[in-house]
Amino acid sequence: MDLLASAVPPLIAWYEKNKRDLPWRRDRDAYHVWISEIMLQQTRVEAAKGYYLRFLERFPDVFALARADEEEVLKAWEGLGYYSRARNLKKAAERIAAEGAFPQTWEGMRALPGIGDYTAGAVLSIAYDLPYPAVDGNVLRILTRLLADGSNIDDTATRRRFSALLKEVYPVQAGEFTQALMELGALVCIPNGDPLCLACPWQGLCRAKREGRQTEYPVRAEKRARKVVPVDVNVLTAHGKYAIEKRPAKGLLSGLWQFPLGAAPPGGALIETQRARHVFTHVEWEMTGRLVRLEEEIPPYVWVTAEELKEKYALPSAFKPFFGWLK
Ligand code: SF4
Image (cartoon, rainbow, N blue to C red; front, side, top):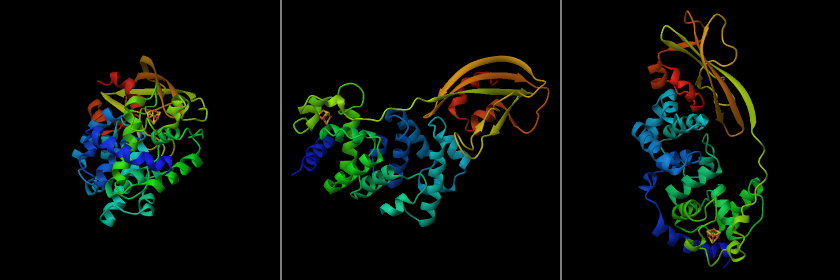
């Protein structure tokens, strides 16, 4: 039996004994798996728990999500970032609701907005026990260690190759196996610091451990440095209201509300300035915030009270440093 195939049974046995009790593991409902996987792509497990439970309270099933207002969905997503994911969730929910149920084929899943190979594999295997792997950076880390494989894991070809290798060994308990791989990466074969090999079900099999080279894997391409962009943020206030506007429909934070950016409109009284920084995946904003009082509520902005702004409008967390000015 090849190494990968012989690694399956001990991993599943380990998972049965060691899996964490997480809110999305209480059943195998496809909607639950899908929402949790999308959230977990950007948020740590501990932080995602609260978001997940609140999201389900608000949108208990795919039909409720399909019916919801987009602004309401974005509001529930506030703080998780990557709002395009929330928009895609809503679009995909509309399609699933129109069909009456989740697709149970690879093609059907992949055709849904925002569902890539990873999420399609996660939902199909966890919810339906279909043999489709969900390969992300965590799974690549543990597999490259197990096999002492020095391929660059940022290369799509590497991901495809590991996906194909895994597919060959997928057991009938596909959902357990997918989750066991994720759990091993989260609890034992961890990304930072030394992996906890003495607690690992693969300690007798792992090539990297045998060679004492665990921390040399995975091999990654060098990351490009983030671009630093100066951004002027204007918190304009008039008669107890604040100006907001929508960002363009394309690009970073597309279609979300923001405080007006750029030069402040003329004629206002500068009350205070504050600096802040926000790190996105590929850029970093170095912000200079200005609180400016105006005589009147000028166009083209939408003017709202502080309460309305916090309750109804999903402002990205990049702008949170200036919320202290809202009265
Ligand atoms: S033995 Fe160590 S390096 Fe190998 S898979 Fe287990 S935790 Fe990772």
